[in-house]
Length: 257
Image 1 (cartoon, rainbow, N blue to C red):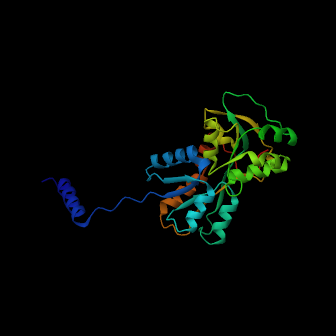
Image 2: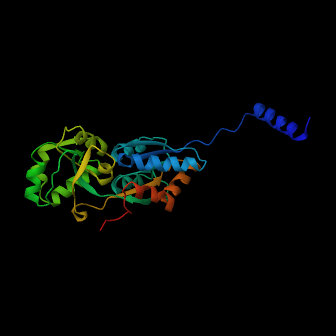
Image 3: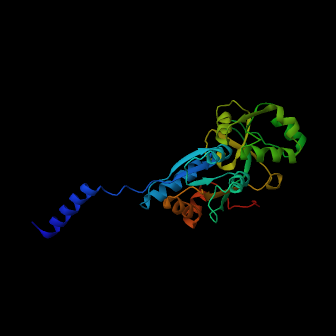
């Protein structure tokens, strides 16, 4: 028997006896719903480099943060605002030194694609327009997109008139779906959400100064022991990772000009 063949056979028998080493566990990522297309693309690129493709759970940042508080065995958390990351940090649920600002976004008014409304930024006119029919928003009391939307409408003097007509959704993608189906005349979503759907159009963009800066922080969770989780976090923050988010319409973190 050829010596190389013999060595391969012996190695194969040893693997059968001892048991082959299990493949590295794929990292589990909890991420804001608005990141769906971009983070899936990042996960695909990471996997093409020979890593295990991350398993990603998308939902409202508020719901995901509560899952972490309840002990969800995840590796990374990507929030659509700083407050929910602050809440986890206060409870020492994120790994020290791993929090970083990943991307930013813009807040817009979306409407069904067959319409051509021009949304005025004047408070009274805005209130009359958005208050004329159902307005879809993520929950303005807890979900980041909804909180940003409420802040913008309040700043522009339209919230009190609009509030009775708000249809509260569990996350920003659920609000987008209401507009897509025509169940709401308008919706307040992120620019990236509107760009991801052929069924809606952007009717207006809120001034950046009308709401707190939209920042998506990422951090490794304190309970994570998977080195691939940290590797994927670093990839997201790398120039290659950030380029993926830019392609989907996200901005650099911080207030857009």
